[in-house]
Image 1: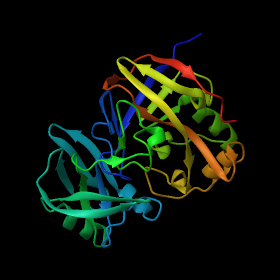
Image 2: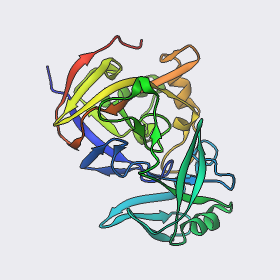
Image 3: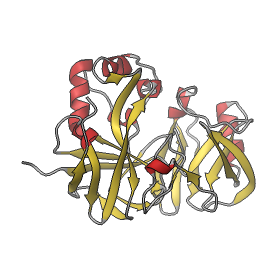
Length: 274
């Protein structure tokens, strides 16, 4: 039997903006360091995503020495976001059912995004002293919190599961549209549904729950164009109780570093979802 390996690692520094593929990540209590620690909110403090603003795909991100370069593909403008930027006042933000105390990023970021999006928005950062707590049933000895991710800290998907969906859909697609952090290879399609606890190097991860998907997977990451066929194809064989599932959501048990090429060892399993 072939080993299960880490195929690719992704961080999404600003929620619902572009991914950055990385070769190594540090895992802390809120997930991958650098993943979804920033977020755009509207004038009422409500989070903004590609669900309603698919044009957020216009922004490309890349790593630089002290943070992330953000480029607007429409105007060509580029601005560097420090991993530890100057900060302004504390705000209350709404992320699904959560009301969070966040802090606005300075250095002209809110004005920059507002001008480009032609809508008053603010770029905010997660506060370490104001963690976003997760449900007690998902908490572990290593984590009781999440980032600005929709739900739990880390999302895992497999190469085989993407290939299975592509076979139903009838053509290939960019897997980044599913916005997973951890892509693995060497397992069967949807085998990740059964992961109850895994370990990668020193990092142990709890397979807390499957990931219910929405229309966001229909957004093409490179163009922002909508293809409703993706979710339709997935729902044809991965739907139960009016929810469509793809991927496994993980919560850290122990912290450390993960690299591309690391072996994924399954410590315990649970029943398959389908």
